[in-house]
Length: 157
Image 1 (spheres, rainbow, N blue to C red):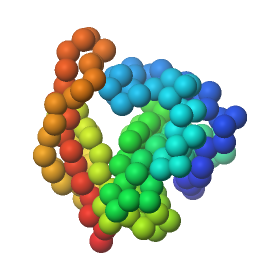
Image 2 (cartoon, helix red, strand yellow):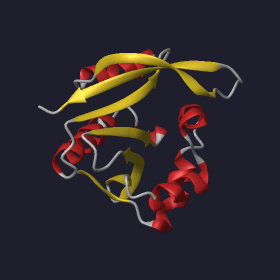
Image 3 (cartoon, rainbow, N blue to C red):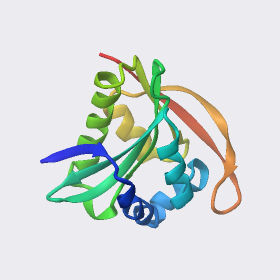
Protein backbone atom coordinates (compact mmCIF):
# COMPACT_ATOMS: atom_id res chain seq x y z
CA UNK A 1 0.00 0.00 0.00
CA UNK A 2 1.22 3.48 -0.88
CA UNK A 3 0.05 6.73 0.71
CA UNK A 4 1.02 10.37 0.74
CA UNK A 5 0.67 12.78 3.64
CA UNK A 6 1.99 16.14 4.80
CA UNK A 7 5.58 15.98 5.98
CA UNK A 8 6.24 16.53 9.68
CA UNK A 9 9.02 19.01 10.43
CA UNK A 10 10.82 16.23 12.29
CA UNK A 11 11.09 14.35 8.97
CA UNK A 12 12.99 17.06 7.10
CA UNK A 13 16.28 15.26 7.60
CA UNK A 14 14.84 12.29 5.69
CA UNK A 15 13.89 14.57 2.78
CA UNK A 16 17.33 16.18 2.77
CA UNK A 17 19.02 12.78 2.77
CA UNK A 18 16.92 11.64 -0.22
CA UNK A 19 18.41 14.52 -2.21
CA UNK A 20 21.93 13.21 -1.72
CA UNK A 21 21.58 10.57 -4.43
CA UNK A 22 23.18 11.74 -7.69
CA UNK A 23 19.99 11.94 -9.77
CA UNK A 24 18.13 13.92 -7.13
CA UNK A 25 21.15 16.15 -6.56
CA UNK A 26 21.22 17.08 -10.26
CA UNK A 27 17.59 18.21 -10.10
CA UNK A 28 18.08 19.95 -6.76
CA UNK A 29 20.85 22.06 -8.27
CA UNK A 30 18.31 23.99 -10.36
CA UNK A 31 15.14 23.64 -8.31
CA UNK A 32 16.32 24.17 -4.73
CA UNK A 33 17.50 21.90 -1.98
CA UNK A 34 18.93 21.65 1.51
CA UNK A 35 17.39 21.90 4.94
CA UNK A 36 16.84 25.68 4.68
CA UNK A 37 15.00 25.24 1.37
CA UNK A 38 12.72 22.57 2.88
CA UNK A 39 12.03 24.73 5.94
CA UNK A 40 11.10 27.62 3.68
CA UNK A 41 8.50 25.39 1.97
CA UNK A 42 6.84 24.91 5.38
CA UNK A 43 6.64 28.69 5.86
CA UNK A 44 5.03 29.37 2.51
CA UNK A 45 1.22 28.91 2.59
CA UNK A 46 1.07 28.34 -1.17
CA UNK A 47 3.35 25.28 -0.94
CA UNK A 48 2.77 21.82 0.46
CA UNK A 49 5.55 19.43 1.46
CA UNK A 50 4.46 15.79 1.27
CA UNK A 51 6.02 12.41 1.91
CA UNK A 52 5.24 9.13 0.24
CA UNK A 53 5.14 6.02 2.43
CA UNK A 54 4.99 2.33 1.83
CA UNK A 55 5.81 -0.72 3.91
CA UNK A 56 6.00 1.40 7.02
CA UNK A 57 8.59 3.90 5.85
CA UNK A 58 9.15 7.08 3.88
CA UNK A 59 10.24 6.37 0.33
CA UNK A 60 10.15 9.87 -1.12
CA UNK A 61 8.93 13.42 -0.87
CA UNK A 62 7.26 15.98 -3.10
CA UNK A 63 6.49 19.68 -3.06
CA UNK A 64 3.37 21.15 -4.61
CA UNK A 65 3.54 24.90 -5.28
CA UNK A 66 0.85 27.39 -6.21
CA UNK A 67 -1.73 26.04 -3.78
CA UNK A 68 -4.88 28.12 -4.22
CA UNK A 69 -4.25 28.85 -7.90
CA UNK A 70 -5.79 27.04 -10.88
CA UNK A 71 -2.38 25.69 -11.91
CA UNK A 72 -0.39 23.79 -9.30
CA UNK A 73 3.27 23.09 -9.93
CA UNK A 74 4.80 19.78 -9.04
CA UNK A 75 7.90 21.58 -7.84
CA UNK A 76 9.83 18.54 -6.61
CA UNK A 77 9.31 14.82 -6.56
CA UNK A 78 12.13 12.69 -5.21
CA UNK A 79 11.98 8.96 -4.73
CA UNK A 80 14.63 6.90 -2.99
CA UNK A 81 16.74 5.13 -5.61
CA UNK A 82 16.05 1.88 -3.72
CA UNK A 83 12.39 2.03 -4.78
CA UNK A 84 12.86 2.75 -8.45
CA UNK A 85 11.46 0.20 -10.85
CA UNK A 86 8.75 -1.02 -8.46
CA UNK A 87 5.95 1.20 -9.78
CA UNK A 88 6.15 3.42 -6.69
CA UNK A 89 7.06 6.53 -8.72
CA UNK A 90 3.95 6.06 -10.83
CA UNK A 91 1.76 5.62 -7.73
CA UNK A 92 3.38 8.67 -6.12
CA UNK A 93 2.76 10.85 -9.17
CA UNK A 94 -0.85 9.70 -9.47
CA UNK A 95 -1.51 10.46 -5.79
CA UNK A 96 0.03 13.93 -6.17
CA UNK A 97 -2.09 14.68 -9.22
CA UNK A 98 -5.23 13.45 -7.44
CA UNK A 99 -4.40 15.64 -4.43
CA UNK A 100 -3.85 18.71 -6.60
CA UNK A 101 -7.22 18.23 -8.33
CA UNK A 102 -9.20 16.91 -5.37
CA UNK A 103 -7.94 18.68 -2.27
CA UNK A 104 -6.67 21.86 -3.94
CA UNK A 105 -9.21 22.21 -6.79
CA UNK A 106 -6.53 22.77 -9.43
CA UNK A 107 -7.49 22.77 -13.09
CA UNK A 108 -4.02 21.72 -14.19
CA UNK A 109 -0.76 20.40 -12.78
CA UNK A 110 2.49 21.46 -14.38
CA UNK A 111 6.18 20.76 -13.97
CA UNK A 112 9.58 21.43 -15.46
CA UNK A 113 11.79 18.66 -16.80
CA UNK A 114 15.33 19.04 -18.03
CA UNK A 115 14.95 18.85 -21.81
CA UNK A 116 17.70 16.24 -22.09
CA UNK A 117 16.08 13.89 -19.54
CA UNK A 118 14.39 11.53 -21.98
CA UNK A 119 13.37 9.01 -19.32
CA UNK A 120 11.49 11.62 -17.28
CA UNK A 121 9.89 13.14 -20.37
CA UNK A 122 8.63 9.69 -21.40
CA UNK A 123 7.45 8.88 -17.85
CA UNK A 124 5.43 12.08 -17.48
CA UNK A 125 4.03 11.71 -21.01
CA UNK A 126 2.85 8.20 -20.15
CA UNK A 127 0.88 9.72 -17.25
CA UNK A 128 -0.95 12.28 -19.39
CA UNK A 129 1.42 15.24 -19.25
CA UNK A 130 1.91 17.06 -22.55
CA UNK A 131 4.71 19.31 -23.74
CA UNK A 132 3.79 22.93 -23.17
CA UNK A 133 6.86 24.85 -24.27
CA UNK A 134 10.33 25.31 -22.92
CA UNK A 135 12.37 27.93 -21.16
CA UNK A 136 16.06 28.33 -20.47
CA UNK A 137 17.07 27.41 -16.97
CA UNK A 138 17.92 30.37 -14.80
CA UNK A 139 20.01 28.16 -12.55
CA UNK A 140 23.17 26.30 -13.34
CA UNK A 141 23.66 22.59 -13.56
CA UNK A 142 26.24 21.03 -11.20
CA UNK A 143 28.84 21.17 -13.99
CA UNK A 144 28.32 24.92 -14.41
CA UNK A 145 26.31 24.75 -17.64
CA UNK A 146 22.77 25.96 -18.13
CA UNK A 147 19.96 23.63 -19.10
CA UNK A 148 16.79 24.13 -21.05
CA UNK A 149 13.69 23.10 -19.16
CA UNK A 150 10.64 21.62 -20.82
CA UNK A 151 7.31 22.65 -19.34
CA UNK A 152 4.76 19.84 -19.20
CA UNK A 153 1.12 20.17 -18.17
CA UNK A 154 -1.58 17.76 -17.10
CA UNK A 155 -5.19 18.89 -17.50
CA UNK A 156 -7.89 17.93 -15.04
CA UNK A 157 -9.87 15.02 -16.50
